[in-house]
Structures are given as structure tokens and as C-alpha cells.
Length: 134
Ligand code: HEM
Image (tube, rainbow, N blue to C red; front, side, top):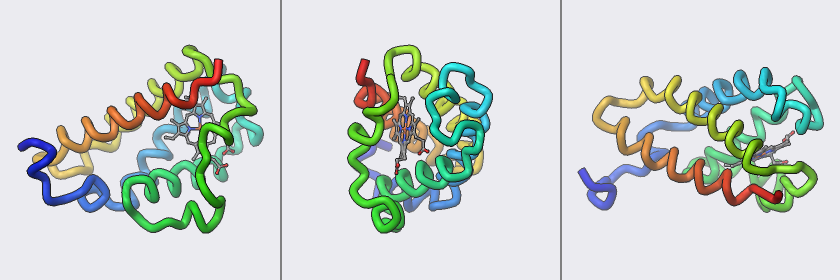
């Protein structure tokens, strides 16, 4: 089925909990990544970072706007300005995100998996490139 023919959005298909599981899997990888973890102000204590990314993704994909209530307008490029993000950092971030998508996609109904994977992967690749500042 083409994307245009879908009557359900990604968020309607996967729900908020999917993004919580996705972000948990993602940070499990980041926590052990010696390229990325030095960038994080709270270091290996990723509880707050997990919450912020999960709430952002839930809001971005059409769920509740709790992120905005807690953090204000995302302005993600500005928020990432303090961290040097070059090709290496982008690639490490994306690798953990790709691994995380793979690890949770099984929770999505089989008939929607390809669609959801393509939507998420396309978004993540573009967003990560947009965050590069070096
Ligand atoms: C490309 C490589 C990236 C690196 C190295 C990176 C690194 C970081 C770091 C170090 C933080 C601060 C951690 C914290 O919140 O305590 C952060 C925050 C955040 N990042 Fe990234 N990030 C990257 C890409 C992205 C992308 C693509 C997204 C969105 C899809 C994203 C979304 C966020 C969000 C929502 C926050 C919390 C902002 C806030 O409310 O303060 N990041 N990131």
C-alpha cells in the first residue's frame, strides 16, 4: 500500500509506549558509546534525556504535546549547538537509532512494519543530518 493510501498515521499505529520503548533501546546503546556519552551533560544518568527524547518524538508524531508543556518550543538545532556534532557523532547516533528501531519494530502489526520502518528511518536520517553543526 502506498503511504498516501494509509488512513492511519504512524502515531495511531504504534502509540506512545512504542516511543518510550524505542528511546529506552536507543539510550541503552548510547550509554555504552564512548563517542556519544561524553557529550551528555548528565553523562550515563540518562533518565532525563530518555524522557525528553521520548516526549519529543511522541509530540512530533502527533501524540500529546507534553514535551512542549515541559520544555517549550523544541528548537532542536539551537539546543544541540553546545555539542560538537559532526559525521562521526551523527553516524553513531543513527546506528543506535537503527538498532533501536529493529529491536522494537516487532511490537508493530506485521502489515504496518514496513511502512512504519520507512517513515521512522527517513525522518531519523534527515533529523540527524540537520543536527550536524561541524
Ligand atoms: C545527530 C546526533 C545527535 C547527537 C550527538 C545528540 C546529542 C544530544 C545531547 C548531548 C543532548 C543533551 C542531553 C539531554 O537532554 O540531557 C540532546 C538532547 C536532545 N536531543 Fe539530541 N542529539 C543528536 C540528534 C538528535 C536528533 C536527530 C533528535 C530528534 C529526532 C534529537 C532530539 C533531542 C531532544 C528532544 C533532546 C532534548 C532537548 C531538550 O528538551 O532539552 N537529537 N541531544
